[in-house]
Image (cartoon, rainbow over all chains, first blue to last red):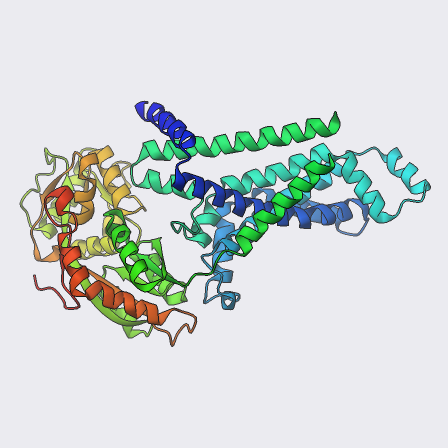
Length: 231
Length: 291
């Protein structure tokens, strides 16, 4: 029990003193997870909207597949990206294995299905009459898409946030394809893992608390933005 | 609301740029056995090497098994490990340039102070045999934590079992291993395995460097410390550029030179004296140490 208390104290000290190493790891974590979330969102929103609007054979099956991928274990994504991007693999020529870039790719594979699937669910919550009115007023496909995304913005934002949260908190991809290299590809979760492995439970707990604190800050900021918009 | 959007967009772009444009400083990737990493030796050598060569040293914490796999796939430029048989195979199969020993120490069998299996002072192979025989009758009291991760230490453990007259499959298939608290494969690095053995009041095989580095967190004591089987040699091998043209062979060569240079050899030979009173490693610049 004392470790938890000590860890909490250490976390507060690290946050208050802007501990250089922790700040660096936290910023790296945010930028890697942020990049993968942003790119995944850029893929998921348009494609998700398209899937929602278009009727095509196999649509139900496609949505089922996307939803199945919600359950993708991070180690499987890590393994898959390892085999593809390792120098001996088919994409090894790129020479990006063990870099932040390949971590972004792995995280995108992990979170795109969540963002896309939840976008589709979010859009199906929008009232049909709204779309019918817009269509009768001569709205184009793009306008319709933007309208429906706007109408469902809270649910869509939740989808994006969930994806970002998964990228921020995952360990498998970061370890297996990033390599957990100090000062280069080490994320918060990797730092927590290493501290635990070395028996420095106090540091591990402190880092864990800081990661949760970061998540708290992010969700508070997003909530504020949402309130301002709706208000 | 407009400004909010602009701020978000700018932030988002900044985030993407910061990752995509990560400066590509010249780097040397090296996979190193957990026992070298857990002692903190790499942490010390890293800064010196980086300053001397203007390169970023990227170190992977990996057991010998996965370290060699990274080497075979060309994902690292060099490996620093400790399993002679597999190292020689790695070189003879053309994956590595040359096996260069640079430091050694000894393995120990450590365990609870009261030594429930009564193996103190035995030869390592005899100690292992007694552990297996008595452990089968009394698991729970006689526990052994194996690395179980195909690391160099794990390979040494298998070699000792072999010397004791058992195949590893026999050990894994024994009733000792089937018992919940008996022969346990930890599947983790040396430091964490020691912590686990400590937690369970178990025996384990460790290199003395990691043992000393962790001694402050352990109640375990050395039980068996002498025997020809216990020599532990660390080697560095540059990955063969013929196999994987993208690897940084020139810098890997410099790392080999660096590790065997008189200055660094002296540093390796005195590493740990300040903190533990004894050195954790002995230098052996390029030559096989004699027992």
